[in-house]
Image (tube, rainbow, N blue to C red; front, side, top):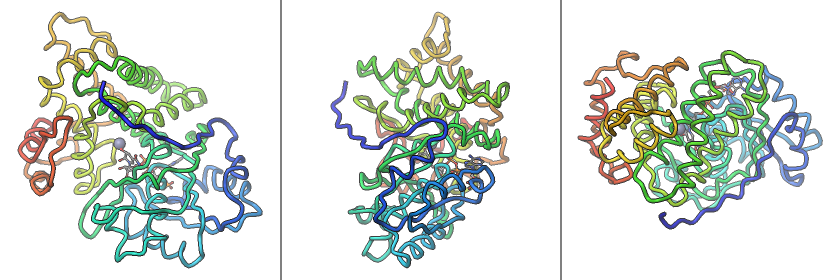
Length: 384
Ligand code: NZQ
Ligand code: ZN
């Protein structure tokens, strides 16, 4: 096992009818700004629950954060928060709202020239307003981690950044909030969660059986529960299990002591930035191609994955690996998520800009830091 240093102070309040606990979690002595998206929380009753819990607080709000949150929109929220003297931010929504809330929290007290400099790593995040979350879409794990991914329309960039200042103080996870999600978003959430696990699991063996089994536990639960979304749409337990899987998949517990990959996410972000694909849909294209491309380097873990997660019994490693990748693809497609660039009419020549962007990156990606521009081109060719 590799050395590690793990810290995660996020309080998780999980379960039905837990939004009313906001009144015990949000500090009373500061103006609170509630940040939300395009209006789903107004249609499903979450907004009302939040505002009822915060009655008696000094509350302002900023709505209109879009999926793949835009810097330009976040900066409007920063201006509003500064003007109103916001002292605590409450993000209510999916990963996009939570990520935006983190950026806004860092940007409000930022004294430099442009908060975008924090996103691209030109300057460090040295502080942020305290924040909390009410999660309504199980997928990203943003509710229990320090990441935020912000997009900039003018330059077609989508850039992740992170800082320990961005840990939420708490996150409320009421699985019933997910009942109003369309199947497309539920499926996206399952695939995003699945890929988060794979990127911390399908690397190389370092003798970490506990982490491997924790990863397998999440994958097996997803495979068992996801089909029930269609067959048992009213089943609360299914929603609860999937929500907890999503949080566990990216609170970095799985990454303790093991190498991590993240190349699928790096390439996927570029697909989203350039072609507007949903985050999970971009990942579903890249992961199978990347696993095929890296099947020799990842052979030990791919064989383990095939046998432990998919129950494959083929004799040779090659056969198990082939079948495991096929099973992965079939699982994504069973949820209505395509796995090929051609499913979106994206041609190889359209991807040249992605390859060029990897050419300009200072560092390569992947668990061996050996995926640069030519490798990205080869992976995208396999995803055609
Ligand atoms: O904007 P509203 O009206 O709220 O509608 C949203 C949005 O249209 C809707 N929605 C959310 N909860 C709902 C609901 N609709 C009905 N009922 C509900 N309960 O769903 C749509 C998608 O929401 P979004 O937040 O964009 O989805 P998701 O949670 O998948 O977040 C994706 C973003 O998170 C980033 C992605 O890159 C992308 O920008 N990620 C963040 C990570 C992190 N912070 O650690 C890691 C991930 O790998 C990912 O990169
Ligand atoms: Zn993701």
